[in-house]
Length: 161
Image (tube, rainbow, N blue to C red; front, top):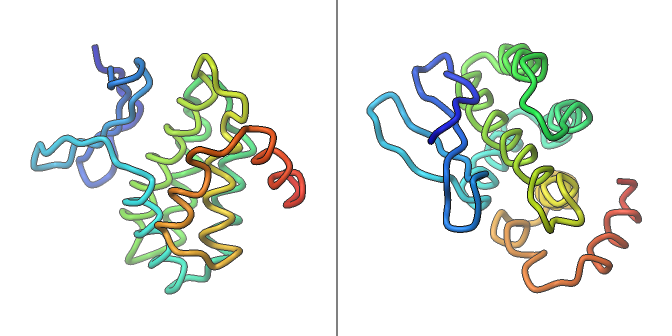
């Protein structure tokens, strides 16, 4: 059974529901009722484009402010923070609200995955590679696949998280 995370200002909804692995799959249902589970490559591509327009460092720093407050539970305070952050992006506020909510839900899901060692840090690595290191969305979305957690942990520690 789906669990609502947030109804967005554009009428879309973000929710958790059963996926192929567990109960923590993040779904986005648009206002025209199209429902899908956004992949990292999807939101990395959009956030990279928004970073080119608004500044990659700004997008990353706003992401980190959300990351710092993320734990195993969906927080209304964090959802409100996302809304407040998105208002600062004027014409792109709906895009920022949508994709920051999706990535926030993804971090909550990572915090709840039974065997995940790196938890939400894996999303931060992708965002750092994308926005601070200048890698492509494809690189950032696929970098960690097949790598041992200790190797990824060492990279994350080098980057300060």
